[in-house]
Amino acid sequence: MEDGCSKVLSGGGSGSCGGGAKKPFHFARPLTYHHHQGHRVLPPAAKWRRHQLADEPRARPKDVVLYTTSLRGVRRTFADCSSVRAILRGFRVAVDERDVSMDAAFRRELRSLLDARGRAFSLPQLLVGGRLVGGADEVKQLHESGQLRRLLDGAAGQDPAYVCDGCGGVRFVPCTACGGGRKVFVEEEDRVQRCGDCNENGLVRCPNCCS
Image 1 (spheres, rainbow, N blue to C red):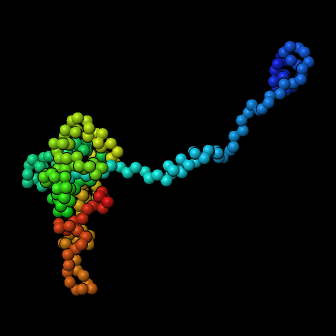
Image 2 (image 1 turned 60 degrees about the vertical axis):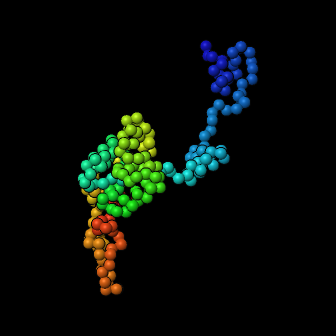
Image 3 (image 1 turned 180 degrees about the vertical axis):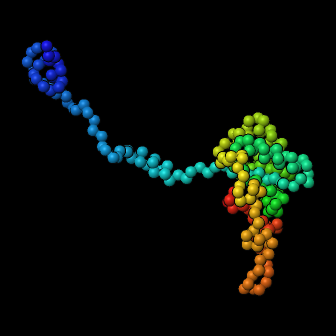
């Protein structure tokens, strides 16, 4: 026996569940939804927010700067620099290491920074996001308490095994303008003058890893 209800819902036949003759039932609106192909209409607020996010600059990673020395003249200082360097490598963050023994400008830069904060000159010194963290003792205390990890959150990452092909990890290369001799010949003036591109050691920062 054919089901009358299925006939009504399908729009075919005039049967009904009660058996009486009734007019076919029609839904007030279709059951299917029509989607626009290819694009979706966004409300004004959503459009504004999308454009706002597109215009917002991306957050810049925190700069991690470590002032150190590669000279072994003072054993304690050299050991402290090595210790802090090893701690930072454990966090796999990119570190801008500034060796004050390779460039006097770094020494002047650090001295000015410490003088402005009423601190005596000492090495190493760590800065994260422009904030002075301190020397070896402060870094070790923060590391042991777990606060250093939170402080370094947002810093750019780097493989601790990475070694620059350009400088071998020294972060300095001989000046290409003077060949490391610190003097250049000016043909127009027919004289030799001090090279303005390099430091007192005839070195410049490695363009591969310190640019």
